[in-house]
Image (tube, rainbow, N blue to C red; front, side):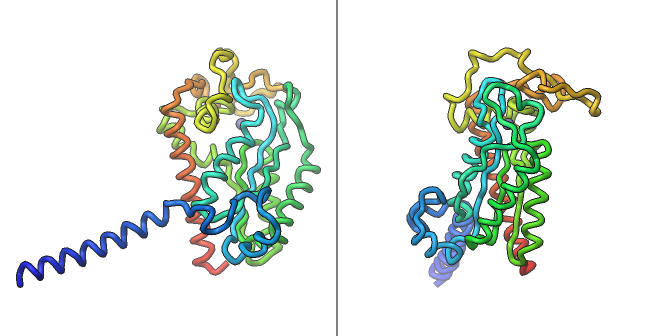
Length: 285
Ligand SMILES: [Zn+2]
């Protein structure tokens, strides 16, 4: 009897444990695309399947935004490649479709480097706004802008996304600058601050595709610290690697750290989005 009682207690505990464990795992384990939709990409889905799944099964969309500009010894499109990779990683976790990237942006002081593009604020604002309006018209409730390029482009995206949500009750928008949100992770993984095409961004691209990073072309004098206290401004910026802090953030091409950084960043960004959606839902917005 005593043994049977103990056995029952134990098995109840085990069931509870297994249920809790599977609940925790369900939060983190991605939903395979085939169970929800044949592809997470808006580029690849057909209109009939889109109608079946949005918004009935999928009400979140991720829009990667970036630009083309020099990035030290990695790709000019790093600001597009990074948010696209984040979107691919997050789509199954969030049950989100991925909108085609907005790859031309407001580059700013690196616009005149070879292969770079500059889109004016007026054009960018109008075009970004209509893309977001199109996502609303297609039935998405949660619109996540995964931005890969900083500077004034961030302000434009934030204001356009804010206006859109205010104009459509029930639509929620979230704009994320992935590298800023995770700057503490940069310091933890690399033991220092990063920069534009610095240790963190170069590592992120190396984790996505090592062939896009060319250490043999690197020399430390490609890097320069950004001006302190707005004390000077040079156009074009005279270095293709911009350090947030003097003496820190030089690329080190360590694949192991790059992979850890990628995993930690994508996990942290996933949690930000999940938490924000949970709070919107709880508030009935
Ligand atoms: Zn960049």
